[in-house]
Image 1 (cartoon, one colour):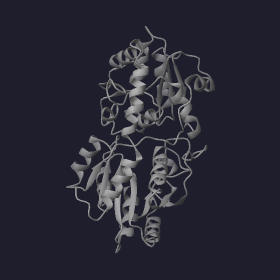
Image 2 (spheres, rainbow, N blue to C red):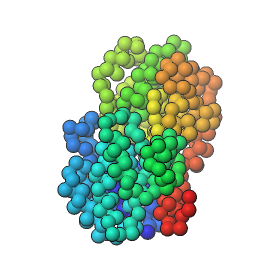
Image 3 (cartoon, rainbow, N blue to C red):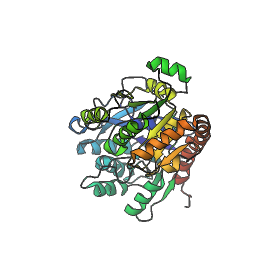
Image 4 (cartoon, rainbow, N blue to C red):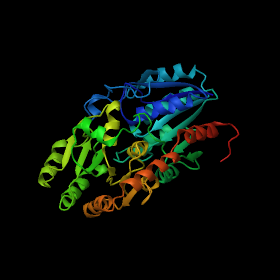
Length: 377
């Protein structure tokens, strides 16, 4: 098949770009694939981070063409008409924010106009974490031109069914992120990062309110009463950084919490995961989290809250520990249990085994099945 992937690509940064690179590389093994990226993804006024571009290694080099402008309707028309001439069999886009609904919907409508092209949306979210007026209308516009969907958790499946009547879809777990390399010895990783602590916990990724870092900070205040452990908070703040730093100081955990307040380039991600004993996802809400798939890629267990699709990925007692959300005491007890019962070896082994469930081969097969003319669901 001739496939077009529409979405973020290197040098634009972040998990969507990483996902698209992996999707491209795995589809490319069996199909003719092109990747169309943004020349402007977000206007600067709407982007909360420091920069939209990746400064480091691409991880997986892929060829892409930067054509789309997320906020220029004339661009959408030009790009749609240009891509229509490519005679693609399938157009795939990752959907995570209603902001992109008008852009992607318009381009896909024009690609489909008087052609046999089929459109597929891989849904990270259908209903976003942080609701805004008009979200449902923008999403419905984009989805109006979609022939088939892939959802990656029960929560997203439920949201899709609440918005679209009788959609054609499959549920496929979010594959692992292989883009960051392999695990390195823990001692070597800690040496590179200048970490001398015996017990190391990792919170990784963009920092937003729904991810529950404030709950983890309160939990560390409890943990330190009977356990010496270092919490690494690694990621760029999309909320008020000073508020979190005040919270760390107020909770009297400045000696046990280290903050790396920046976007981590691809070649450095593996060092942080390799250095950690366990990864913590104290989310207050979620659909799924790519952080769990990064942890599994490095064979790291996960302590996660039972929200959204997290409990579908983190097998309680097998590859991690699952607890209710927004409870610092229960989170502290989970950390105590992890170290007090020496669970690292057992849960790390479980994480390595669970990783096998999240293959890109399953995703590619689902795309092929959904886009086959004779597919019956």
